[in-house]
Length: 221
Image (tube, rainbow, N blue to C red; front, side, top):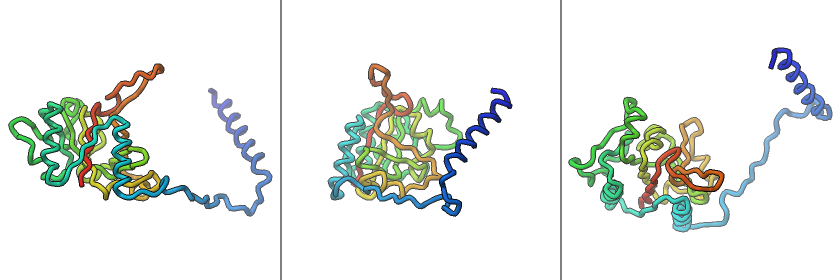
């Protein structure tokens, strides 16, 4: 497009806007407060029911859901790493060290997250363990915001196996409207709904395209 064509198109768009505003009173405010009286959740659920709904929707998205107490957590994590056959695990900064006490140093190398880790090096790591910011039951979504124990975005997107720990009930909400006020929009938010997957025009599902092929979620009570 030439400069003349561009200027002409701009003038036409502005003219249409002016015509559309001819019936607007001159003293009308430019912006009105729009009522946002959305439903905060669909129905009323107890904490236990909300957690069950989260587990159901995560499973529907082909994530593997596990239950654990604080005492059982190290063994649960070690078992998932062993089942995957991983010999190296990425550890985000500020991940609780107590979560890792059952991992055998002789068979599993812990790789601390740092700016020196390249995408190629992360691609060679077997698993990544992370905490989360919040989980949404109605959508089966986990949100990471790069906070303590979550690491940089690529740390949880490149390794093929992601173990994510959700503290229940504190980190579980029923709906997106309940989640948004608890999130900081300027942080690097990653919204996860099951393992990475896509489908072609014939609906053949392929996993591991844009992120981990396997997602293990631990509901930590």
